Image (tube, rainbow, N blue to C red; front, top):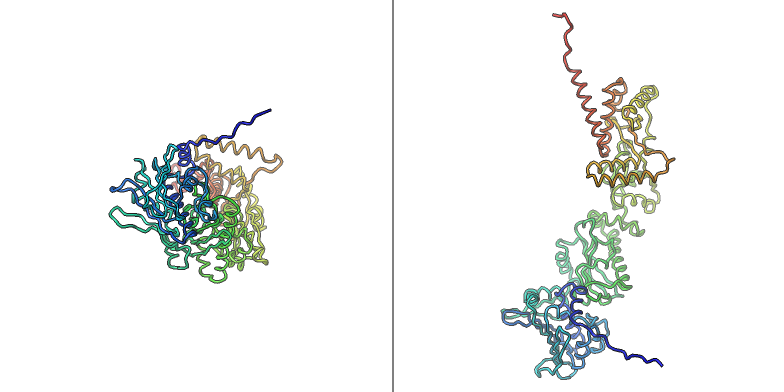
Length: 609
């Protein structure tokens, strides 16, 4: 017959727990004051339920006159039994049972808040009298894990006081300046009065009415200026009844950095949780900075972040909907302010409308894109261009714009979200058609030179190919005679040019990396597929090209073709590789030599006087 060993309790090393709190749960010892304030506010909430009393927290910092920090509240207080239940059981949160209130009425819910005081002192003294009529009690806890409970003095008022004597390195944390700063940071908007005693006498009240929960527009705007450091572009009310979340979103009057994310100042029952919650608003809402107070969102054990649960997901969705509704209302009611908003936050809106059909119908006409005739708003673009023609990359735009017929509009789709925005147009404007522009197709559409010059043109093309060796050459008639030539290449050639520029600018290690990447891309290409091609398109309407066509073979012709090639590379913002720079230097040297030979005086014939 087997016997079962009796169950035993775990033994807790309190110093190890304190080290865990300070290193891995709390961000630092400064949170001790927040934990004490939370306990005090919870006790006051319980007393208000019990007899309607309570409502004040008084803090006496360490000063020259006293080495003791004291925080007093006039809350419900503790009985000797409560002390044993609340303070002697590490990790147990039983306030809801002792105070007889629902858990949601309390800020602190993890039963470890009082231990945070051991990060700044070695002993904690708590003196308390219960509002329920029990005798006063004194509890003394030590960092070594021991504690004593004894009767308190008869003159202890209803409520609780916490007494701390700081360790040497923690004294500044309990001084007046730091205590005032921490009390204002964590507890400025608590629903009780929090005061701090001053060394010279008197006190300062650190609590105030939260302007982001009121209706005074001037106070809201002043709070927004403090939060943003500038006048808010707009103020958006926020409310999620399901999680008892309320607040304001302030629209930034400037475009944030491209790497910026939205962040929200969060209070839980008016106690500061965090200055920068990054998960309470959708990612696309980085053009607002919000501040909210909630009674239904759940803090992590450190009470410095939010638990990612269903409540947070619902709140995030509804807050995002509120920002979105504001934009829609602005589109319908105040076009001038909408134009101002779009001018500042256009990139964010372009990102948003890709996934929001209803918002797209209102906002897309106000957005703008870069074109060959300047920046155009979408509603102006669709009125003047049918179909809407768009080059998908900046490189393609630069090449096509040189040969675009006069009077046509071409969109540069190479900027962030612009190509996707143009593809969205038929959904917003049913009568609009979008056409993707390919540079090779555009060259093929250009008119060939006149038939009577056909022989001269063919000769020019053949001789120019020989002069350049690795580049195909064709002649076409552009509408712009000032453009002598256009360099056209498929994407693989452009990538190779970019790699060449990076290889020449970097060191040996970087060059090796690029070489391996190039070999890998070559292996991945189908052997039957045509090799990447590049083409120099000469403009037959350009006078220089026509003169070149009638120039006989020789150094002048070769140098002229090579200079046009390099000029076309530069005009298209293509990088010059080492071979291109050498080609340019050689061509220029030849042209200078030819010019010098042409202007040098000829020697006199022999026998002349």
